[in-house]
Amino acid sequence: MREIVLDTETTGLNPANGDRIVEIGCIELINHVPSGNNFHQYINPERPMPEEAFNVHGLSEEFLADHPVMADVMDAFVAFIGDAPLVIHNAEFDMRFINAELGLLNQPPLKMDRAIDTVRLAREKFPGAPASLDALCKRFNIDNSSRTLHGALLDAELLAEVYLELIGGRQTDMGLTANTAAAGATIKDQERVRREPRPHAASAEEQAAHKTFLEKIKDPIWTA
Image 1: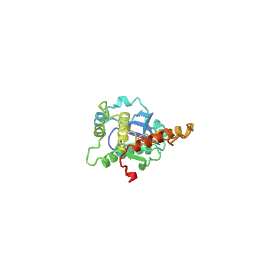
Image 2: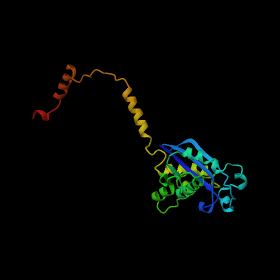
Image 3: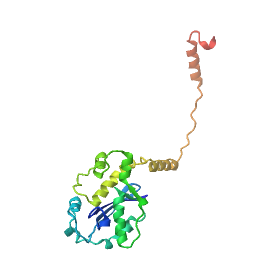
Image 4: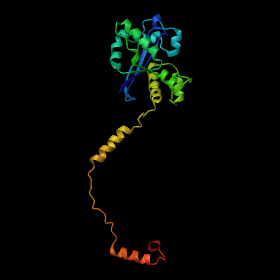
């Protein structure tokens, strides 16, 4: 099973007001395990960077000016995610921005139902508890000390670890399926060795010794 853990950084909170994506980070999971196949791209938003957004992710206009625009990035991004489910923290926010960027390029939007929202998962599992990425890292003892600023790839990496904990830990089946199958194959493939049956009847010497022992017992119950 292939899943994509995804995060974005933007120039603001609302694409309807002209805010754009400036960074995309994706981690590929195969059967809930990171495969090492990632997608990461900084993007020139073709607009100024508000100070409030810069204070969140630290991506300046000068830095982003040397990177490709979304029109040059989108095809590679869409190809990477394919039709896999998308694991996103606060999925509505990122999906809204991604679909706004797709709309600007006259491409069809992504369906919202393919997104797995880890905020929702966390709130269902821990009602009333904080559900931010930092709070969940603390709950699951995941080291997020390098997260001094938001970053799409780093946040996706942390979210991948959080997601595995939210769905039941790193080995949801305890690793028994493969091991059991392997053990079964090993037993099946072993050559069976036939052994002669062991003798169970008492010898004449053993019978005589038993008779002598019984004669020493006074008033046995079996003779009453």
